[in-house]
Image (cartoon, rainbow, N blue to C red; front, side, top):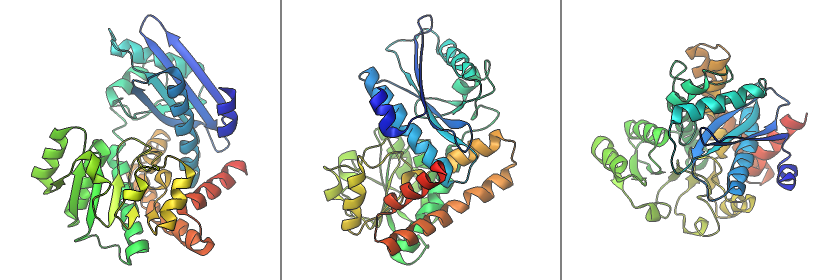
Length: 339
């Protein structure tokens, strides 16, 4: 475990359990040089504890990079609650997690993530103020989608020579809260949409409401398109899938899209422009961070608008250095985090 922490340069790893509620929680704090760690709380089933710890550590590091390049006074952290097979009282479980957060005295601020909701954040808020995306604070998903849309336009400009998306083929993998909101914006821009999701109901909704083409999950990555937008869980770009891509660029909302750093180099070698995930999907973090600090919506929206400009700058550096945008983004983030 300490070896994993050292490789990721993780500051702290906190584990807690509460047998009365079934809580088994992990909080990974990656870097707090720029401010207290902020990151969502996942509530998912894991095959074992090591898998949950690895997920928390990897995601916490991504949150540090995301906050740094977004210009936020935040560090990076992530929480994972291992979802039990059966829970008697979900509210009580999240209240117990709130007590765990409070014990860290502000070092970590939590938020919604995969498997959690505003109602869960409300339960946490009964025991700590170090929580955002509560019912009163609002769902960050639309703001993530807004930022990804801006990033897709910047990516289209860099790779295709125009930010006008009308008529482009864009494949959206994953139609959760962020993916569907993004698909709505793309459809309004005149995009020809190809969509997939594990939930056939979400796919049908996109077909009926947005005029999207339904594609199986297995086939979506190899669907010919200008831009592929992964919006589900991470690791989708790996040694098995990267060779099947038929797109000019990858720009989506999912965290940790690359299974390894080498995949970024392979995309670069194939001429596929990659939008670093923690840059293009930073809209949700920007919203929860600034909202938690008391900023009004116009100021938050103005900050979101900078996502496309940040990507444009990264693409310019990547072209000049002849490196993958992912490598350039990592280098810029590490420079900010190390001082």
